[in-house]
Length: 114
Length: 114
Image 1 (cartoon, each protein chain N blue to C red):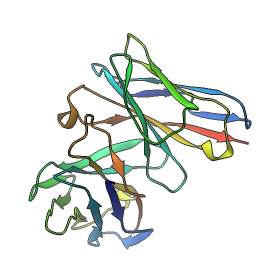
Image 2 (cartoon, rainbow over the protein chains, first blue to last red; image 1 turned 180 degrees about the horizontal axis):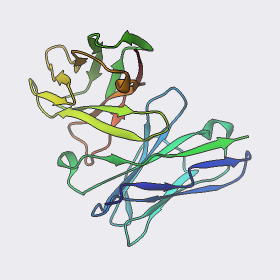
Image 3 (cartoon, chains in turn green, purple; image 1 turned 30 degrees about the horizontal axis):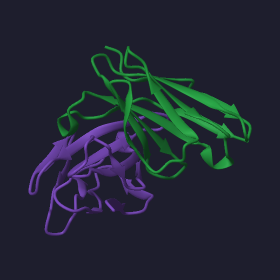
Image 4 (cartoon, chains in turn cyan, blue; image 1 turned 135 degrees about the horizontal axis):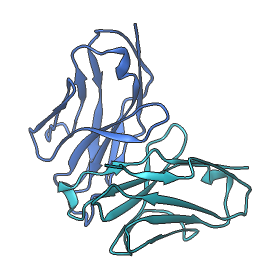
């Protein structure tokens, strides 16, 4: 049973560029959340997708956008990259159902913006 | 707003020593509380959780008790092993949230020496 898989594992981009990160949820899960983890910090909630719609959003600018596909996989897009966007981006999946559905995290995508 | 504060690290212990990592939270009402662990190069793994006051979460020898009166959820283990070396995150899910969004502390690095 595959867990949450993310691609790519590492990525280097230049300021101003755009990036797309991908996530496949754990088998049977239908909800995907994205988190940003800066070096030495705890993860910060970006947004959550369920039924192909953004259900909740954290305090991130519109440069951060996402998408969920009918097979429940998801993409995170970041436009006009800034140096401060350098971080580990974590995807987490769960079943729709709130507190009774624990989050399962992938190993993350390490994004470096130069 | 809702937040989590945990003790700064690193915490360095010898094998078989007693571990305490302090965590306090700010939230209106009764959030659910979690401890996650992050091993080097990996994503987050749920270690334990508690969903109501006075609940004790436990797993792999780790324990934490939900204390409403002190708004705390301290992590303890009686005898640590080298394999416990990792970063530990305390987190909460807001009590009135529409999703299972997590708010994390900044993490505490634990280094266990043989």
